[in-house]
Length: 272
Image (cartoon, rainbow, N blue to C red; front, side):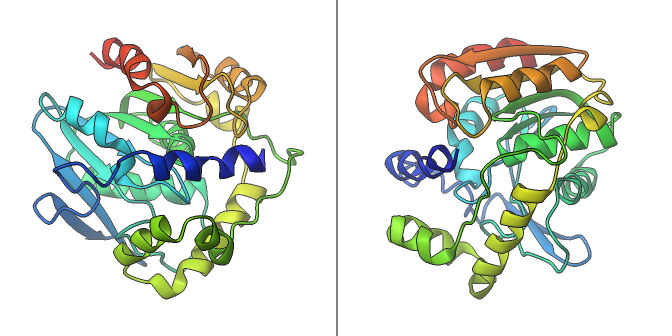
């Protein structure tokens, strides 16, 4: 599993996320901050219409990974892209990381912007946060698209993750140097990674959360995903009453970098 997660680095590094004309994730024309108590959270807004909220993945992930979705959606929707604590231009805060914390953060940002119900799209960490958000605040989420997620029961037996600043910089110094330049607290990056390791290794989400979700949910995975295996993906879907599932063949974790046309062909009819 660790190898599958680390392989994301190759995908992110090879994808031209920094070559787009619009600097997603670092755009003064679209960027805003909200102080939610112990941290300032950064978000960007594109387009007008009914709100679609984007929650990105962890460690390697950030708003810019959603660039192909933003380009497709912003012509019809108001696209709200939230930067997770410790990622990009958002601060870390003081409390330990958890999926509930991330869901609560997203709730505060969304309600700061709109009182409407939203479509939410989340990938990996953002997908797990989206599932938690839909369970905690069912009136908020109209439809939910989650990618790269799976069942995470308590005391799940799996390899322990241990991301470190040193190992990530050694893997791709150019990529992570770019990420560090965005951070308001770059000296706390290792602290952020330590908190992420604890969340990944100790936090859990399973039937107790999934069965509370009322909105329609589209769950998507790559059939070669080693981070959320097919068995974990299917078990998660079984607990969600109103679900549709899509497996993208030949793809690992980041399915929208692997085969965006196939992913979009599933997402577009679901949200519309």
